[in-house]
Image (cartoon, rainbow, N blue to C red; front, top):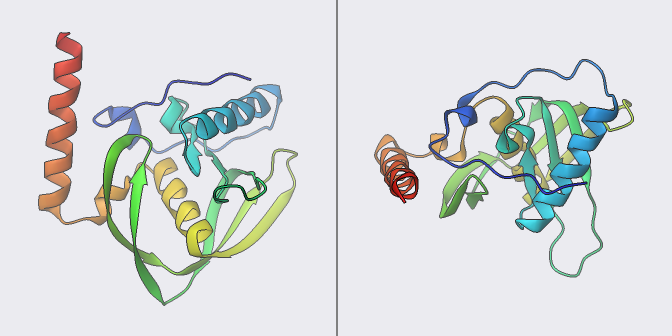
Length: 172
C-alpha cells in the first residue's frame, strides 16, 4: 500500500470521464488499497481514482466520524440507480479543491449499484453524509466537480483562485 499524490484544481484530468473497470485484478485491488490509505491520510471521507490520476471508475468511501469504527466501502463501476425527490443543502469540500467549502443541494437519499473489490454485485441505499459522499464521488468519475453545482460566478472565482495558486507554485 502507498499514499498516492492527489491532483488539484485546475488539473484537467479532474474533468475526464473515467473508464469502466473491465476486470478486477491485482492492480485494481492495489489501487483500492492505495486509495484508502491516501483518503485516510488526507484526511477525507471519499476519494475517486481520478483524483490520484487514474481514470478508472473506482471510488473509496468511509463516512464514519471521529472515534466511530471505520466502515470502508470500495465501489467499482458505481452508478446511482435511484434518488429521492427530497433534496438537502449541505456544505461540501473536496480533497482536490483544498480549503474551499460551499453549500451544495443534492438528493437526500440515493441507491447505488456497484461491484465490490471481490467483483460481487452490491446495492446500497444511503442517506445523510453517506448519500452525499456517494454522489460527490460518482460525480468525480463522470468529470464533474462539486463546484459545478454552484453558480457560474462562484465557480469561476474558485477556478480563478486555484489557477493563480497553481501558476504561483509552478513559478517557485
